Length: 285
Image 1 (cartoon, rainbow, N blue to C red):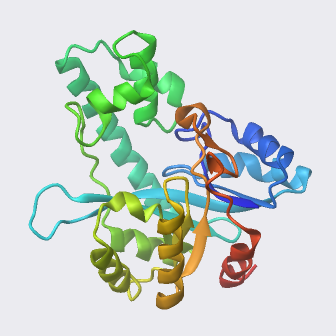
Image 2: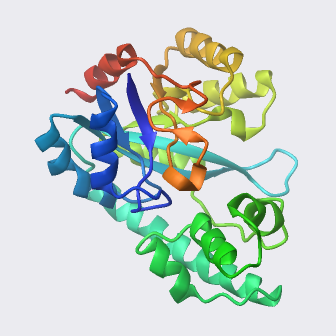
């Protein structure tokens, strides 16, 4: 069993990199990838710790991208995973620093929007939780602590989700741009949790077919949000389109309390080690 989609305190998880490595070793994972949002800090900290524990750690990242809608309006959000053999090149790290600045500017705008709605929140207190990579779950935790909402889910439902009143759009890179940058940095780009994109079956196929010439190499088939039927559908698509499979729980610790490391939601996401070797081969490992 492997887990190639996890988050640490370097982005929006609640386990430190060391705690995540210890937890992965404790449950006998054969491989782990830390895929924090827009940062490699968690991986960089975890790499020597994983080596000490004899745990195979694959360098990863999760990047938010935008997919314009044909008829206009707000672009769809598409998350893209990137996997690298021994860490990305300098050019990709430089590109990621640009995305970090974009995230910072969105977070300042989100503070302003929440204050307009009567939520007494300061960027400093959110950063005290999120440290160098502040994300919406950190805002949610401050709002729960101050009594504005009853729990994290309510914070998203009422204020922070894409359809909620305080949502501030982040000016993410285009999907094809992010694919190009991951490939240029020596990585494998994989569409994450495709079910969240919200496309019809035919539109999903059309999108994947369009992205392959742009450099897409994989699709996440195993994920905590995927039903058995959905997983099998993505596995069939991977075979028919010649894509590699990736898979993981999308573990965030307490920020997604119903998702367990390595097994997902109620045991629905046990990614097999068999999908790892084709990835490592493609990475030249």
